Length: 441
Image (cartoon, rainbow, N blue to C red; front, side, top):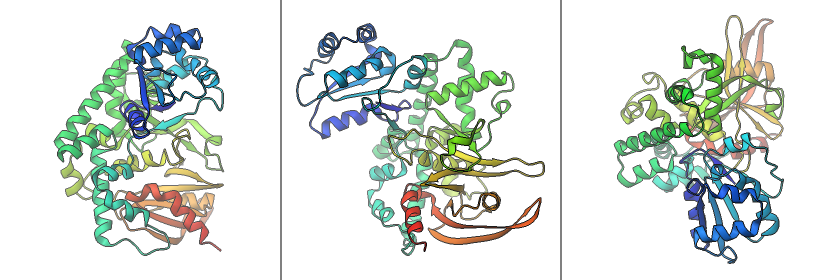
């Protein structure tokens, strides 16, 4: 079962998979065949298969057929029937997908048996996938990046950095990447983003009441402008009650338009064991859509320094966040955390925190080549992490950091091994951390 937001490429991925493996695809769009819901509700597989064969025009008894139930959330009884396909027709491969699947799963008491249904979570195309389409020759350089090896040639470093900044404008929505691949026109990319945003806005009527629609449309425009900030409902709407704004954010999170990044005390692994449910910030679906909604143009990214573009830090945090969110692979539920300490005089906030094996690793994100590590050092002083990560535009480096930090008990020393990773190499993080840990005595 593929789970993910609308237009991230779920249906296309299934069709490509079938073609590449020489399979006959028996595809049923359940939004267009709502009458099937009652039939699925009988849980009688023989009449269900007969009807599906009539709809698709293919025999489901063939050895090379793949059954694809698209927009499966439209007929919730189909979800309950999936287990019987596995038990009674184990040789028939079935893929289900839905862009609003979270609503169906939360509103119905389905029993999804372990081992019968496997979930895969799909997000926008990653930067590596984008490079595969736009400039695949750069992938070999990323693969060769090593904590033990010299830095990349300067021209390669600059080329990767340039493509990464371009990705922040185009993003990972497949239709936007294809538009740029076809015409190399940022105007065409912008028009594609506008169409996608309109589609999301139109979708709200499928899972929201009329009174919620205006607020949801407002949030679609305001969430990208508040990336990286602790959620305060008044920042999103001064006219609506906090509980109404909270419920609307929950709806958008279910639709995968945004993701909650919860504060964790980072006492140990797993990070969600001590997360704060009511203290969180938000990630948007895609950095390219975020750029479109906030009005960022290519001239802003290519011609200005990080101090000139007011939201470049938020764009960098969104870019890193949407990649780290899926760092554990397709079959792990996407989740992400950060660390926040709020004090009377000053706050400290580490952008993200991840688990790497038994360790908690704090992450700082910088949009340029400079920036202080004040919050990271505050974290290191309290939590004593063996490894910390900084993403920025500098070449890859590993260094021991030791610095005095002023606390209520006086000056204390904060020490950590700092792995500094170029933004364009965010997907190499796990491998680079493994290399660093292997080098320790």
